[in-house]
Every structure is written in C-alpha cells, then in structure tokens.
Image (cartoon, rainbow, N blue to C red; front, side, top):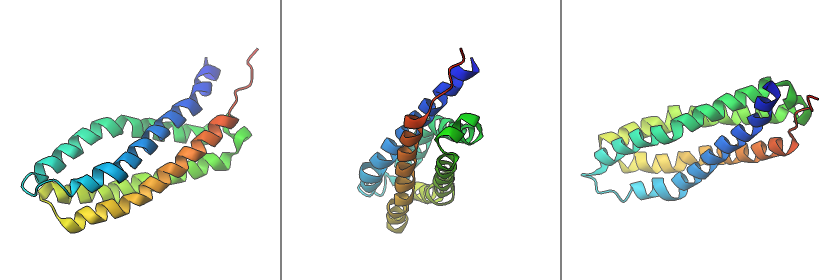
Length: 154
C-alpha cells in the first residue's frame, strides 16, 4: 500500500504544479492586465471578489503542491532521481509563497480599497517572479516524474 501511495506522489506533485503553472500564466497574461480595465467605482468590489474566489481555487492546490514537494525531499525514492532537484523545486515553491504573501496579497488588499494604478502596475510587474518560478517548478516536476520509479515489491 505504501509503495502505491509513493508511486502516486510524483503524479500528484506534477499535477498540482502544472495546474499552478497554467493558472499563473493565465493570471499574468490575461487576468492581471485586465484588472486595469475595471471601472474605478467597481474596482473595490471586483478586487474583493477576486481575492475570495481565487482563494477557493488556488488554496487546496497550493497546499497539495506544498505537501507533495515536502514529501519529495523526505522520501527515499527521491535519491534515485536526484535529491537536489527536489530541494531546488521546494526552494522555488518557497519563493512563490513568499512573493504571494509578502507582495501580491498586500497589493490585492490595497486594490480592494480602491483602484491605484501604481499598485496595479506593481502587481503585474512583480507577478513575473512567480510566473518564472512556477514555470521552473513545472520543468523540475516533469524531470522528476520522468525519472521516478518505485522498486517492485514482489
């Protein structure tokens, strides 16, 4: 049973990571730029709704991704594919989370008070860090998935 769960680990990790890669690119190219088109009088309601709705979509996936990333650095099977990849991926994830909670969340909070062009431009510009970091994580997740194997328990 444990080997079956271990076999699913890289798939859950890659799946959650690539969900976030796709989402962050959508946010970077489509969603954040369009936030500047919301009429100023509607901006606080829009920004507040954005925060609430986004949390329900990304929260569970980010937790799954973080949990599987941590398990990858702890499981013995990771050594066979290169433990440094797991650590690099975890470091990139820490960067994504730090940027999210120290930069993007406060900027969203400001925008929920009323549209501020400088905060909006900063949100779009600083989100490139997360976009690049999550993209790097996606590549690492695929490398790890491609190399992963659980020894036959027979």
